[in-house]
Image (tube, rainbow, N blue to C red; front, side):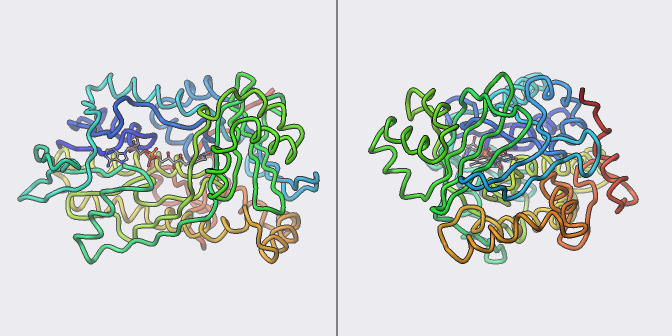
Length: 424
Ligand SMILES: Cc1cc2nc3c(=O)[nH]c(=O)nc-3n(C[C@H](O)[C@H](O)[C@H](O)COP(=O)(O)OP(=O)(O)OC[C@H]3O[C@@H](n4cnc5c(N)ncnc54)[C@H](O)[C@@H]3O)c2cc1C
């Protein structure tokens, strides 16, 4: 098929490559003048790693990233909130901290290798269906040629999603904007190179430090939205002082930043499209199901979307299925998992970063004991790993790599996801 992919971000680049490698003719429309994702690092969870393994890229990604054995969340006072280790599920299971730019470069190279055409500086904001095809339309009104399929991978603020909802009354979207956001950047790091550390306080601020290898970390400063403008207005030194006051060990790290231009400012929102299909248009990644970054699942879910959609579209190549059947099958496979993760993050986000006394008290009381409730620790780690399929079912490989019949047992699921890795 001739497929238009709108958005050459993290998920769109992976999808474009996989579709191109699968024999489709792919044209990507990207609004930016040059490519490259913004932001610092990303945590690849076991579900995302399974996709990269399926793509034959995992060794390369392991080489540019660093293994993360688990998460330590604590209070600014030093009081522990929770500790989650991937090893609880399977010896050697781990996350991978990696720079976004380096991961993106791998996908970009692969897209070039399979002849994916990338048209930059093209902001696509609507589309028009015709018999047997769909035309992407740019914000200046220019109508592109017809494609068999349009994949909207234009991120959490998707203009195409707004167009779809405005023109198709049967499409419903649940959206929640948060009063919190983050600024994040890469910085030198001397802390534990294998642990993701998150530190909270009473004001709703959060510091996160994700090692990404090479003595660096991805540093998050989670704040209320209105503070972002105050930080920009007050300048670098004032911000560095705030970080040092919040967490003295992070002060040194903030001191290494030479300009606030090194930081990316982002807002949080939860988005869930109840159906991600509008005729020959399908929404994937953050455009269909954006989450706040606290569970570290956004890109991992987008990677799984990419492989599942490509698998279903592969079936159209020899005419065993038509595009509508392929899209329905895609939605059927992805719906439960993305519903679980958007609902759960929507529920948890107000607890992660909050200045509300009641929410904070619940968080501080519950988090330290939750891992000791029988069975709950494994479920928490399964969720963090991207291996939960829905609220009810404990685990099933959500890798997109089809496992038939479904294996419900945790151990078998994990072995299907990836073999244990020896660390030494
Ligand atoms: C602070 C922070 C930390 C995060 N940490 C993690 C993590 O550790 N692990 C994880 O899995 N996820 C994490 N995420 C989430 C992750 O970044 C996203 O889920 C992921 O990037 C989604 O990929 P995507 O391709 O759907 O969208 P994006 O990566 O946002 O890409 C969208 C692309 O579409 C382009 N575009 C937008 N509109 C148009 C248009 N109209 N026309 C043409 N092009 C357009 C944009 O320029 C961009 O290139 C984090 C997010 C934030 C904000």
